Amino acid sequence: MAEAADKQARTWGMLCHLAGLCLWLGVPFGNIVGPLLIWLLKRDEFPLVQEEGKEAVNFQISITLYAIGAGILCFILIGIPLLIAVGIAQLVLTIVATVKVSNGESYRYPLTLRLIN
Image 1 (spheres, rainbow, N blue to C red):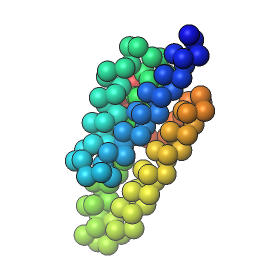
Image 2 (cartoon, rainbow, N blue to C red):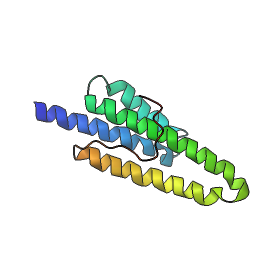
Image 3 (cartoon, one colour):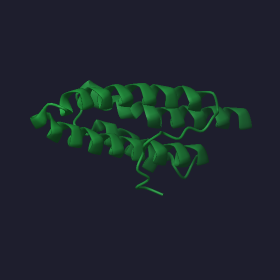
């Protein structure tokens, strides 16, 4: 029974991170709304989701702020490579976090603003 609960917690933790990729599916602010919804719905049920959900939401908010900053800098051309770098970082780090959580490890994103504690 405990093993099944652990597997279910890891699955929901992975979904918190994977939901951040909703932005790539064309859902405006889906990268924030997806992890936020999963975190709000499952955080009381699974401690792992409480931890990983906060981490995923904080990261996606940070990435959005970085993308807005890079978008503003597009007017002086430095923003274009920065915007590409932010997009690649969001994709790669989300996948890394998902794999880590699926292996039962906790993951902390680098360069993340800890807005939700």
